[in-house]
Image 1 (cartoon, rainbow, N blue to C red):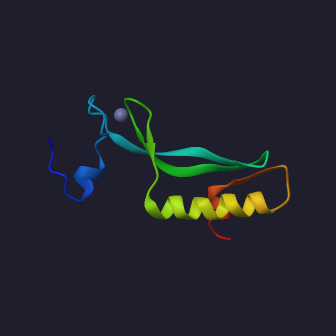
Image 2 (image 1 turned 90 degrees about the horizontal axis):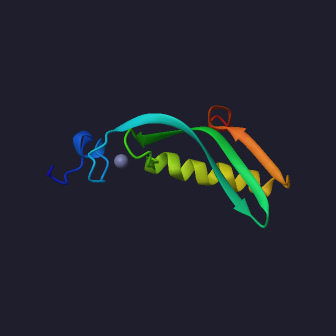
Length: 89
Ligand SMILES: [Zn+2]
């Protein structure tokens, strides 16, 4: 067992028993509200190479929530953007 200390080493292990390793990846994330959907492509995540579970860093998750809320508020039934273009807004 690794010590539960903050730091890179503790962050790179999946918590499942298979001891997969988290690697940086890009994924689409989406949200739905009242039948409307919003999608953000290319969101930077960390993905387990063994089980496919993904994690979002705190700042990424926060920003993603903002972007999805903006998309949902745009009035389009189905809105989509890319993380890289949305991040500069
Ligand atoms: Zn895993």
